[in-house]
Length: 412
Image 1 (tube, helix red, strand yellow):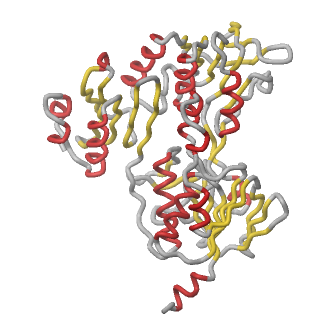
Image 2: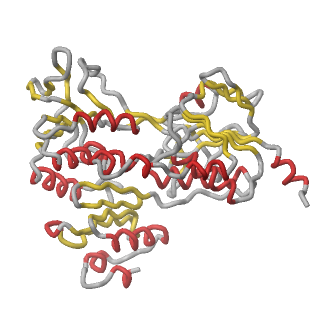
């Protein structure tokens, strides 16, 4: 028998703006929780939801076929009764009438709306940035264009020594390209990892033949008709192609125009990923949420996209839950897997476990004696146990963490 509440839900319509990791997870969670109403997903790319992390790694290298990128087979959306609208952008949210307007003139009514609009690349603002040969990497089509330009012995300039830039550098070095990385800060991945991990990857890349320039800001891209060189610090560096990887920015303009709270992302509450409008939720890269330690932050990672979507979907079906997930990240470069859990601070006490020269080690961050973050290089046990220690707020003696004769499972 269908009760009043379930009966009402059968006639509800949930619209999801954004066909990415969060959107896909929200559909799965809604149906798993018994939601029986209509679901419509809108995406501005001509694809169903797909994985982005492999784009700068296996897909760029050519070791992963396009079909393997997609998060779910087409049958999943059919079985989930999810109407897919791809290749069309949402242009306006009309909160008074609960309507989303699309670029093709269509209007979608909603009872609840999930904004999973993600993020986009940060564009570099220097002369010559629009020259042919200057690339960005965010979607499938970006990689398809970049792959065609990946030719051995060609000079590749990478602007930005973060995850994306270094992952592309690793692929290019394997392809036999002449690679130079330009990083404006004083070390690689400075916003994401400890100095110990930065130093390790600096050596790995230079050993692979990659040239690295730190504290150097690109001033211009130069060339007649297409890219031929890069100017930085008054010097000219030859370049056939360039990859710009200087970060991403949240796609919060739709929410901002609708009058929702935005501050470097759509502001959501700590229980349900709800916005200032009780009918509108948000999840993923586009949000600013309250983290485990009670501070507002925006995260750019698969884990956050998945977990926030679960929380938003649960709230939509009347099961709100406080968001307190441990964030985790990873990067594949050469034969090295970097796995990170937690969020480090410069003031943390650092404990190194293992030997970087053996290309297998971990860096633990202790805060007030408790494990707050871990960075593991080819060290899965340290990463997995570290995540649990962080979640538990476990206090571990530094000398015990550093002692490799004690198995990580014993430390846990």
